[in-house]
Length: 274
Image 1 (cartoon, one colour):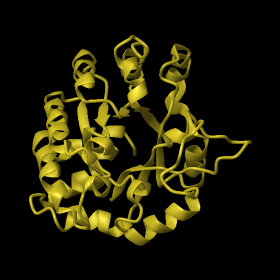
Image 2: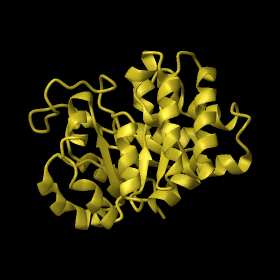
Image 3: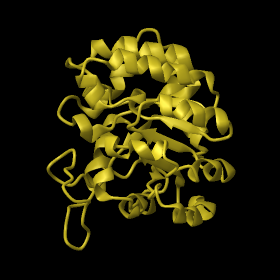
């Protein structure tokens, strides 16, 4: 079972379905269900977790359409307006949506203050109460250590090695990875080893990413590390199949059993995706 722990799907920016102001997608054209499914088939990807992209705003309708059309292949980590406490009313029934497994939080730099000024304090105890796994991206990992300790029942998944493309381009990827590795002491925290081609300064097989993958693998172990592509963020840098063989054929420190977990079994178990 090969499961991609993160893909984006989106529709065009139109007056009937507008994006957020001044936002640009990862590709110039919409990335549609009809595009993704044949790519998954060709590469041998059985399932994928859809993370609705931030430029569309806090909406999940197209991801849920993918689930409706392919219920055995897609699940969703949905978006919410996390700085609005009224969103709390949605959480008790969140998982009643088809294949909605949890929530993805994105914190762009202009939103980091939400983590320290009380804007999102309401969220974590309720997510823990209602057993809602949370994928989180954007802010420095040090912000999340306190959360992990305070809410040990909250399933927390650090996206994209726990860092961002801006950090990778700045030459500080190693330092950021070290911060992510510190979170491994919390059993409720795990990490997506996703978007490796985007972070790499090299072409396939992205040898400069090997030490970073190994460091997080050694910190978290195979049951708390998840392969994922974030396919559209480095679309022309590798084929879907190469993103698989990057892990299955070039990382010699991963055993066959390790790969069974990392390439799919671990994310299924962590999210409770049957």
